[in-house]
Each structure stands twice: as structure tokens, then as C-alpha cells.
Length: 223
Image 1 (cartoon, rainbow, N blue to C red):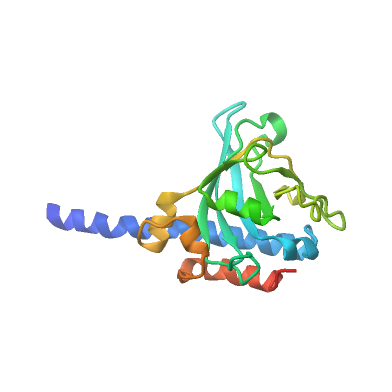
Image 2: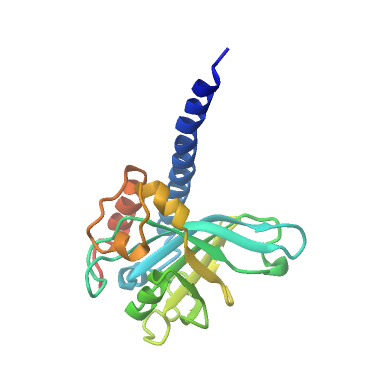
């Protein structure tokens, strides 16, 4: 039989590994969403090239029955540099709370992609918490050749969703975005804020390299 001290040690070792697997899965799922939208040309490349930051929330589901709250966990990356026009940063973990969307989602798992088009919007997102509509303007983005809002300096964020293989602009109402502090601490091994992650001084953790590589592949330069 294991001694109590041995059991405690095994649990202490296993918990970080379980957390790491959970965050690796989130990053891998986000990478897969990116790959899908690019292969389908669901978002115009010219729009991606203008984005200052991108947030990907894979497999968002409704929490609870009926008109339950829709809550997701995803990943953010911003372009480095004072003007947010450099290479893509290491990933920062974020949460998404869209309140109750009623029958819009049903029981379907939905992917969300948010493109931050202005530096003002990027700074708001990196502040740690914001509400769409109140802190930053957001509209449903255009798919294919329709790049709704991509050239409008008054629109901070373009929002998209993908469900059942269909990708289109999505209205997220007054959804709230916030940093996932516990996830970032687990991923980077210390307490760290989003601005520190994207300022170019932090190395990309192994779990996030595929996500950043995919971004650099699909949109290597800011236009």
C-alpha cells in the first residue's frame, strides 16, 4: 500500500500535468479553428492582415438548461510593437461571457473568432476586462468578399462564429471578455498580465507554439 505521503506527492505531480493538458487542448483547438477558417477563406485575408489582435474561442457551449449563460474559454494574440504592427505575440488565455443567447446556439457547440481592428480596441482588450458595445464597438464581420467594418475606424472589433461547419458574422451583443488569470499563471509558471505577454519580452510556451505559428503562416505581416 502507498503511504499517505507518497499519495500526496503523486497527486501534487499529477495536478499540474492535468492543467497543462487542459490548456494545451484549448490552444490546439484554437489552432484548428484558425486553420479551418483560413482554408475555407471564411474571413478575407485582407481583413486578417489589418487586425491588431485576434481572439479564438473554440467549442463554446451553453451552461445550464433552457436560456442558460453561454460561457467560453479561448486564446488571444496581438501583434507586437507600440503600434501593434509587428509579429504575433505569445498566446494569452481569455474568457468569454455572452450571457443568454436563447435559441441562437441551442445545444450546438460554437466557435467564435474576434478580430480587433483598432489599436484603441486592442488596448481595451488588454486592459483585462471589457464589455462589447460599452467599452469597445463591435459588429458582425463579413465573410468571403464582404469585409463589413474592416475599413471603418469607428469599429473596434469584428465578430464571427462557426457552427455545424458554417462560418459567418455573429452579433455578440454586450458580451464580456476578460483575462483568464489562473490559466495564464499555469501556462507561464507565474502570475502575469496580458500586456506582459504581448509586449515581446515573454517567450512562447511549447503548448502555444503551434497557435502562433499558424497566425504567422496565415497573416505574416500587418497591412
